Image 1 (cartoon, rainbow, N blue to C red):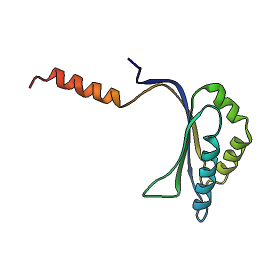
Image 2: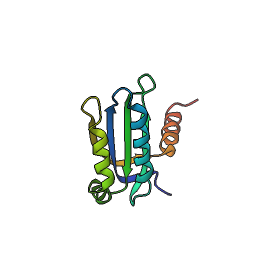
Image 3: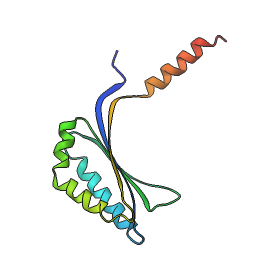
Length: 122
């Protein structure tokens, strides 16, 4: 049986508050960086989000398959550009790196539901 787990993923998470009149340009710049990230070795995904109730709150994330690939990206020109965008924030941004030891897919939910049904006889 194939495992539903992915091991060793690392996620970069950036939260920033865009200055007035710069939100659209910052979103566009982050989207361009996300597209470039997707072309790099080891980048599993990259996304840009905004809060629905405050579109000036921007979120940028990248998921990496291994620390060595993430470290390579941190030495790149693309990361330098990301730092330059962070410096445009209206407030100090938050940048964090999350080490994810495992993630589970839909199979986990089905297994949990099946276990619940098994423990409650009809």
